[in-house]
Length: 371
Length: 198
Image (cartoon, rainbow over all chains, first blue to last red; front, side, top):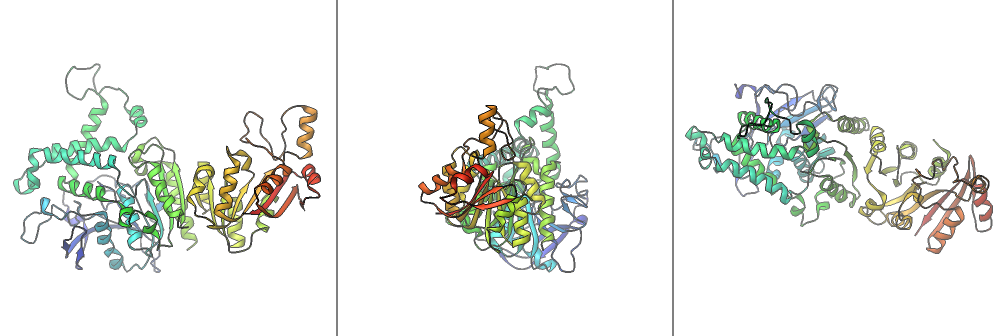
């Protein structure tokens, strides 16, 4: 694969002071756009990706040759209609699809590895804010994203209260819970326990902690689904065999499925990026940034919020999404909320869930008409 | 749009901030938004109805009035509307208190169990009344605490709630309820509409 050829990048010249205290400058942000910006420049939607996403929201991802991660929601005539809206998405810093991250080289031409500064959700959105200047957009029509994308949505509107008309956080939280942190730590431990990880210097040692990264992905993947969804899809079905084999091969279809998910993930994702991005999620606590009062995060914005959760999402459950609604209502903000019925778990926002997609479309289109 | 909604809309001045509790498919909200430039919000328990509201471009929160009104600050709306739903709550008194806390004023409408057709139904048929405003059977009705206009009138007075306007509605006929005609209105009105404040 020729990664560089297919990736558009913006080099941010301006120094960016990170939460960890370090400052970065002249760093790349890899981005992609869909649709076209109108002459009034009032139809732009900034989409933020989740943990393992990238800038290739829809269509065929030119690097992986697979469908973009939000193809169900974004595209011509879809919920986020690219005939109408100009969609921008960029790879988060710390990521591995072209934006500044641990697989990049430091000023001494050494691959960063774990010497890359620890980044936060706040750093990610501050870096992405440069895209508005790049496109000459004064105010976005909307910002949206699910999961970690939703966290970036919340942080963005808090940092830049008058830079978006509408705000759509999906299946997310304003503060990573102990359970969320626990699952992320499990993934990180799987990676660092792989002897090929070599304290993060696998690239210069020409090794790859693929096994550790695959296990991290397998564990995380379970958290994206629901018990009911898994049971209905796999149950106790056996994998290409008539009976149990009394061994440790993948007897069950669910085992085989998870192994497959782990193995394809390793081909497209960088282990150190996984460490950095999960860390950024764990550090996310928007209320803490405002002395424990989440409402204060949104006090300066007049944006119209629409928050969406899913019934079977136990990773970022409805209550955590509702906490954001409550914080907004307590300051009289313009906020709508709906919980979508789905047995597809946290992953619902990425999948073909018609009630979700129609709510998203209706909210966007009606809000745009009122422009 | 039903006559009840027209009467409610007439009670609200232009450019106000209004919360419609149990807003259903948003018909009244849309009318208030389009015709009176109302800054309107809705609270609705049914997911299907919430979707219908979103399709109309209305700001609605999926939620339960008994649990979710508490998130709104005191007097954060000029008016809070509750149309024909008070009797369906487990604790109507608590909901009424919440409406009057959140809203500077509240507009509450109640299907009148004292309406003559309701009385006749029970008296002569001996079965639970079914009318236009009370369309369900006893076993599937959402209504838990039916009351009459007279009951509600006395109830709000006993709670020191100020009644600005109390209207009796019978089909298209609207009339004012007061202490002296309460008995008559309680017999001939299908619906009571109250504009109250605490």
